[in-house]
Length: 540
Ligand code: FAD
Ligand code: SIN
Image 1 (tube, helix red, strand yellow):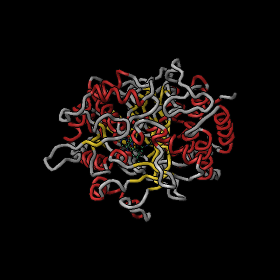
Image 2 (cartoon, protein in one colour):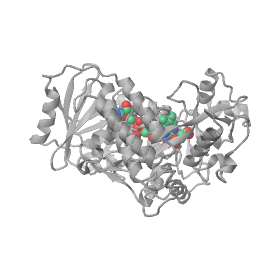
Image 3 (cartoon, protein in one colour):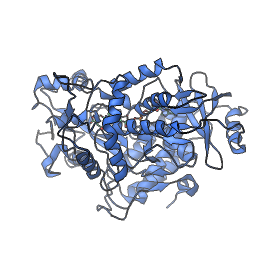
Image 4 (cartoon, helix red, strand yellow):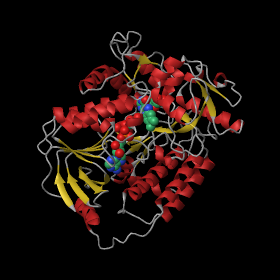
């Protein structure tokens, strides 16, 4: 076991993690420096794949206002968004995005060098900033990674997995244990501040737009450490992932393509969205997803189609260079052919309960970005609000730390020492063979089939039972032997929390759709789960 000490540890190198590292370094006194831990290469994350863009209620956009953005966000959130959180994030978007630009992020501009804004579903005006056409996430990531590499006060551990938080009986976080996938060594990192920026959960589902690292690690380790989890039943499925046979990790066909005028059609080329919502293709995301899913079920299709042939071909190529390229690689010319699309797990609205400053219910533990549940998105996230939330909350967390003395306590609590001892003890480290890939596949199928777009008491109880059985096949309790095992352990914990939370919410709201409770029940508010309440021992 190696031991180290930092003023702040950030877990995750998506946009939330990178931007918070830069802001903290810029604003906060750091006697022991910052450590950024990331389980893959720096910058590999969901953020990197973001296409459509980032909401910016910018002063120069005369069509827009925070009142309008707040109203759209709250409408999409189906009654579960927190007004004060929405207002704060909306009102701070202009300043934070301008600050982001100072770190080298360049959003697309027109010939007059003015920012260009696009339209996405459920927005009343064009307000989504984009970069590199449809490569918004990659452009932001690259700029921020470059700055992080140039900043000597930020140390980066790549290929290193955070496996357990060090929390004492007073609910104070004192650091984190990490596992180096290359050397197979554990390291105890003491720090008065740990920030979880570990992203989402898409990999829990058979079909997803998320890359392989989206396994809910931060959620599981926060839950295990005693943090309160919020709204765990709310998983957003994107309506239009590219449906190529055999591919389960699906490339996204951005909502911005519909924003530019593309239409959804069935196998006969017949439009159907008018049957589901007055805003048709630009209805809230959960509605378009269920519409596509319903068409597929009723007409026994593996996918529906997106018809972008009505958009000028030059515009298509300029606005969506990566989507055009990816489709062409699969024999689809989007200027001439229909694009096969189907829903896929995309975003997690639930998460570690935090306020706008990223503070969790554990002192010294913060969560930002997709891992956090601030109350912004409610039951259904409005497109392109996620990247905005990442940057506003990263900015805020740095502001909170500015007023704190970041000192590591000298004495080590007994319960923390006991945790460290578990990872230090290699007396029985004889790994028993476990086919994690197989177990992961099983979990993804359970979640897709029983905790997916349409849910019911029967499907959720089936999922809970199947997940309990799956757990029995995974013979690890605390210590695992590689990254894949740690990820699977976390996936199992988060899958159980989602299924239990979905079972308990006896209503339909936003992305949580119960076939046995079709109406929204105004009395159902945020849901919370904690380890102390023994949620994972749930039996009906
Ligand atoms: P991420 O970007 O996912 O980063 C998480 C980081 O944590 C990664 O670096 C990961 O390796 C690391 N990590 C995880 N677990 C551990 C661990 N145990 N130890 C160490 N490191 C760990 N949102 C928008 O607003 N606009 C869009 O246009 C948009 N398009 C999208 C398109 C796609 C295809 C996808 C998948 C998502 C899209 N989203 C979009 C959602 C948005 O990209 C994400 O919600 C957001 O980027 C999350 O950022 P984050 O920093 O919180 O997490
Ligand atoms: C997209 O480009 O369709 C994704 C936007 C988002 O998830 O916010």
